[in-house]
Image 1: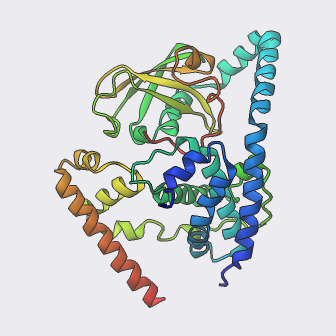
Image 2: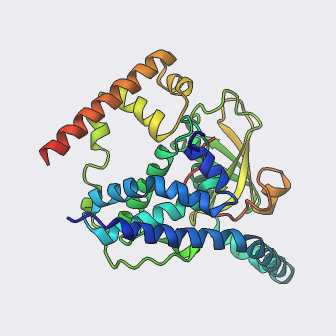
Image 3: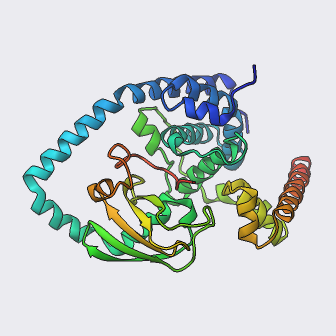
Length: 179
Length: 161
């Protein structure tokens, strides 16, 4: 039997907390890793992870499957917003955790350096590729919508996204090897 | 920099699952409580509340609630004028919305206030999505733009689709 997709889990999670737990298990380490790389503070990363999933729970009814069943782009967009909101407000974003009654304890004050280079990887791509990746992955548009937005054909949009993601993979690999 | 032990993430998963289950089980009761509270407030202090709200809500607040509710409206720079203060607004976008749909006319989208809660909704008046009629609170429910249950819901990020 095929594993349920993220979209399946989020749909089930409308009435079933265990389905959301399965979704959490699928992404918890990656989301935590994302926050830990940005903050370099384990406690802050833990709390930001909690807030990310708490917000995902509260917003699960609004998830729209536009990427073949995966909710990764949607979830990481939430993670990014939680991080950015925390830095802008100079305190860890925890409104969703408070609403759900999930205890978070870090007394960490967000640091603006957490946002250093947040989008720089995308910014290093050629404009056409960066726009295509942003529209497809961040905004979760279908390829025909990406094409319309870029004023090109669907095939060309697919090529731009493919090349952009390949360039991102290459760049991230270089950065990992350098660090 | 040390990675957290996965057991801590497992503990967080347990806490979240319990909180989510509690959220599911308490939601209907909470909604009922809220409705009772709203009814009481409306019955007792309707005039005063409306006057206070009229002071607090600006047309730019309404304009900001469009992209806060709908991702496709981000960057469209709406401006709104009050048709009926705190109830109905006419909003015009400076830029066309993202092409999520080929014909926006008649499309309805929720609006979200600065506290990230659904506060109403808008209906597109033109196919290009540049003009919207927006309604706040119960008026959006009456216009069948948002459901009674959706109004007031927490919406941390603009919706897609």
